[in-house]
Image 1 (cartoon, helix red, strand yellow):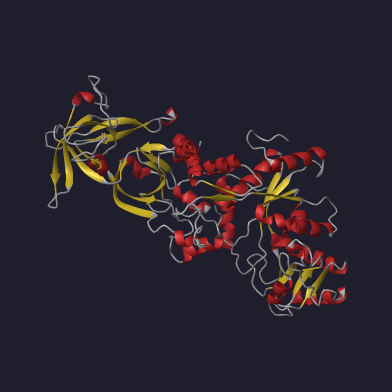
Image 2 (spheres, helix red, strand yellow):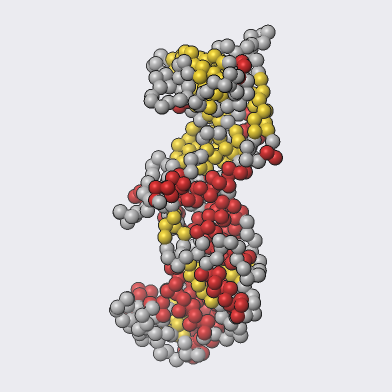
Length: 562
């Protein structure tokens, strides 16, 4: 297949399509997603996942998951498991799952090959010395005194490094390229460093570990990857990627690296180091805190995987880094949930509403009626649910004003409003506590308005949600604001954590929700009518996280920018 779906064409796909048409790789297309298992995947990774798996799908190819595990000091099996889980949640299934460490033996043999060819040498200098000798942009590099070490000597030293004869940092293997190259990555880069550490996949079998640049392109070649898709920060690495592959006996056409812009969002950071600090310093509760940009956090907050995929596809692959408004992502979330989320009524800040004209039974208890309300007006197949109604209800505190301000159309003394799907009611009086706060609103109802209809066609300007007090379930609801107050965290101070919002989470503990909410499945997202979309916590019953509000802020932003 050489045609991409509508809207998915970009310069990456143009490169792939050209290679397919020319038969560069025998018509094959194979990509890979190569995260390092040293943390949890975040929204930036989602774009890379969608790009790599999407290109493979569009051209009938394969995409592998490769754990880029070349640093035993920072990588753990828990991260490996979470990466696999997150990719599956996004809706993708790798052709195979492999580790860069699976190729350590081949990488080592190829390193010996480069030494034999006079293209690599063992350097006895420490890291600080190497850094100084590397020079800088406009500053020439200094050749190592070991640069012309005989190949046989370097080969013997590398084998002793592999055998564990030397301490950490005492020696390294470097490629012999050009210490005066304009591209800093070509200035005799390190290929192997000594690390006496236990590796999560290979145990203590190795005490030398390849660097990213030595492992990356060669792993691509071993797997048969045709197109190595990376983000723009690796563009300067491409000459080194190509140099290594050109010096090895591959026996087939080398893979082609191409770079695209990474995903950055406003009010968001994706630095693993800083995200880890948020967790370690308990500024958030965990890696899956719903405020976190990790895929686990977004999932817990209720972001549908389909919305994330659609968003990443829509912004496409470009050659220039840019920062997207988080409201744009939220618009995709809202659009998806509008079609899938069940509607429910919930009162976050309850105020008691007593209908004084409501009938009672022989025992003096308020009569209970039931109304059939739509589960989702966007999908008739979702059917209806029975919702109990009686003379004692809860309404939102903000839906009543004893002295209404201008343009306030909700409930106030003498004003009639519609209770969603039930009756028209008119406030008549209030009950206050000792401090003068309204704790109860008294009202009358129009029995002829059953179902919320106006029997004589009279107009009311507000429809309010409610919950029957006798049938309500108490729930906790977590409300979220931006984790960072600045659009570009750290833009002014240089430290993103300086812009952390101390009021990014508010927990409400006495919310009243309709009885059907007790059966909400863990992780399920429902729409609280008039309030927004809320996700049931995966572990704690009757805890709901606000996913997004109902207002499409992105649409308003686009209008202002026209």
